[in-house]
Amino acid sequence: MSRWNDAFESHAFKTSWNSINELLASEGFITGEAEGVGIEVARLKKVVAYIDGVIEQIDPELMPFNILDGMNQHSTQCLQQLNAFQGNQNVGHLQNANTNIDAVLSLIGTTPFILSGYQKGSLSKAANAYSEAIDEHLARLSKNIDTEVESVRSELVDINGSISTNKTALTALDNELKVVSQTVEKQTSEFNTQFQASETKRTANFDKVIETQQTKVDSTFKDIAIKSGITIEVLDKYLEDAKNIFGVVVNSLQAGAYSSYANEEKQMANRLRWSAIALMVLGVSVLVVPEIIKMVNSMETYALDWKITLGRIPFSLILFVPAFYLARESSKHRNTEVINRRRELILATIDPYLALLDEEQAKTIKEDIAKGIFSEGGQGSSDGRIAESSNVVAQIANLVKQVKGK
Image 1 (spheres, one colour):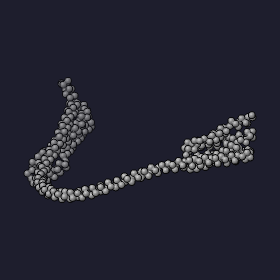
Image 2 (cartoon, rainbow, N blue to C red):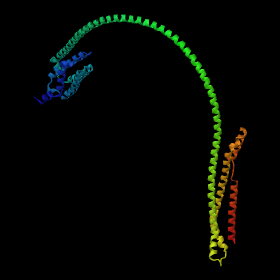
Image 3 (cartoon, helix red, strand yellow):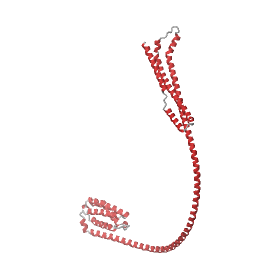
Image 4 (cartoon, rainbow, N blue to C red):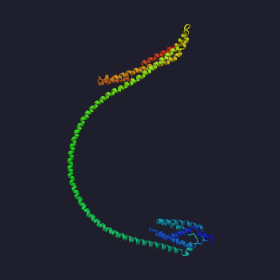
């Protein structure tokens, strides 16, 4: 046997093609009777039988293997579709299988062995295979139809029995419904009678209760109105007292605030005054203490040297200038203290004074006092002190200039 014969017999196409033949010939291939299944299977068997007749006439040494490769590709796809159909009995898989086997038929038609297939009766085999497939399909249909007819006959017998039973039950139910209807009519009539009597009694009781409650409500409302009037009068009095107390409290708080401010100003004025005094004492000490020490050391020969003494004046000015500034600031704080003390006194004594006056006059006095408190100056004396301090500094400066001129 030549290598072409070996390659042909061992080619994958032979395996896939034999699998297609076995699957189509198996008894469990068709398990249902979906529409169109018999025609699709019959056509597949017809084409397979025809191709089998052609394959029998193939000379392996004259067969191109590239055609076998293409036939194997399409036969494998056809086999996959047939396996899928066997699993779910979907006729679409059979249609796809016929499409794939058409491709195999087209490829084998290009070989020189197609005429041999005609001569050897391939068409007859194909026709017989198609006829047998159709007969098998018709036999299955007939068998299934007989089975379905027997099943329908059995179901008809059961249905007839059920209908007879249901008729009896319906007759009994109709009788029961008549009895129930009569009972309901009777009970409805009795209920209407009892309901009307009860409604009449309830309406009378309700009217009586409404009248009683209305009397109670009127009496209660009258009592509440009287109590509310008394309560409002008391609350008005409390409100007036609260206003007076609030005014006194506010004035007391303001007086206390002004007292606090005055105390702070007093403390600051005292600190500044003592600081100014200390600086002035130091300034004087710079001028006088050296002369005193000199006088004590040389009592008999001591003679005042005005030039040396006046030469100490610039050093004293270093202390006198801040002393004068602190004295001026102390005067400002003292004036502010006096103003705050006066405001404290006014706020502390205004309420007893105004209590003896009529409302309009008291209001006018309050407005005048408010204007005096919140728009009052108080810096006049301070300005005078500033002028005096400036004059003193100017005089000391002029004195120094005259000494230097001499």
